[in-house]
Length: 482
Image (tube, rainbow, N blue to C red; front, top):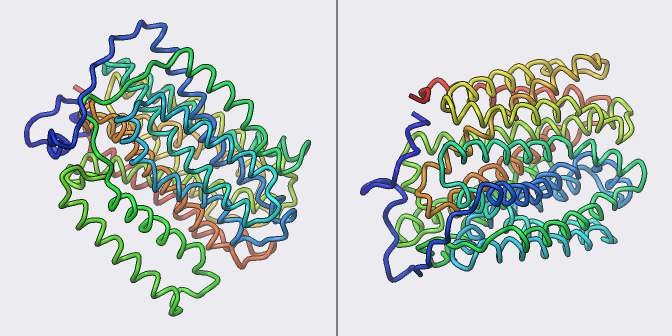
């Protein structure tokens, strides 16, 4: 079924309605780019995606060092990661819509500036409160990069087969950045301290600004929609409160009055979001898209993949450094098999999707992630290093195979003119999965000392395996390309 989404928009198809003339602005369609220019655009967008992905995971390996430097515990450390991902997840769809209306290159470059400025503030933050606030601003900048970069790529690649290959490359770079973050972070921590994790963004930002000005053409959606301010506000509340209560639950108690109040408030906000979005002419998120089991499964799959990845990265960091006594560099190097697996398999997955459809790469992704999680279900403080490396390799391979079929399916599930929103929905799912994974993993080990951390992490590895099984179920429900 997944391959069947790459069709022209037809009457009655979700996403084809709710675009009234009164809420739109029509822009001329830009001329087609040469092959060299198209791949140059892809390279520039990949550079920005490398930055966004790197910053999502590079901080993980530095959490113990940040905790020592700022004298904070696990709960505050979770917020230094999730302040970024919560804001990023909450604003992605609006950023995609802004890019479609005001110009993708303009929003893309604005995002680079905001991200770079916030990175400088992170690097000089005097307290954990300042660091968390600056990380939230980083999330604002990153929200202007992730969906917009994918929209630029989709707009530059009109041929479906070439687009699938380009998305495979894009997913490969994004996967590489996510997986190589701990290695890069470990090296920086060893030589320059935890503040260097943020200084490193500056030269990448400068390079991306220059290259985008030279190679990336300006583009807009032919029909740009108005912003949905109520929907945006409610979506931010829904994501923030649900993830926040998962982070704070171990401290305040899962059945305490504060927690029960948070559950009720989050449930009301979720209901209000569904009610508001179902009645707007130009909603932030057209909920009718989720009537398609294929589109819904692609979004759910994206959440599952990033839950698995972030649970793995967080538990790995805390286990190797706190329980096994690894240095940050050694802990980062231990994840190299994950980086290699993701980097090698992501472009291969893109080619498989282009030739055969999503079933085979999804099957491989689900199988490898499940196997990697099961390898660590019995983790203890004396687990052999070869077993750890094999588990990381399996999870990295699964992550590499997963992104291209899920992204390609979700993008092709919307009309090409809605490319910014398509990229934003899948990116929102990824970042929500990232925030959820950090909250789940951190909650499991929040009160565990070095001796008990390995045992406390066992449910986390079961979650990783369950995410892989979900992908296997999706693969069985799909059909190969004909």
